[in-house]
Figure (cartoon, rainbow, N blue to C red):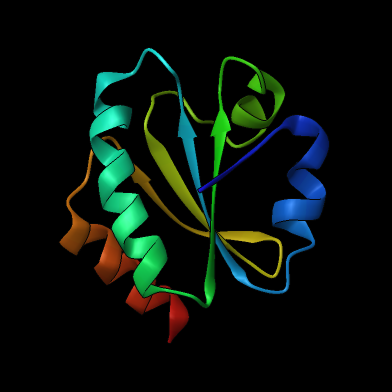
Length: 104
């Protein structure tokens, strides 16, 4: 999963031709660390989705712009717009359901 920053956010997310799953995380966030293997599995299964992550401690401006108040938070973007959101730790099934719903 590629880590992006405020500087690369527009190119990597807003201007992407693909659906983008963006995880807002923090290095000190235990639930974020538990999400990593789940997201890695899904990344292998969904080649048509770009999986990215953004550290809220270093890109607070983007977190604030999207009203991200807790880590982990996952936003799905399509055509540069947020289409869905999950707050907190989630199961693989929950994220997969969200992806399937978004990709229809």
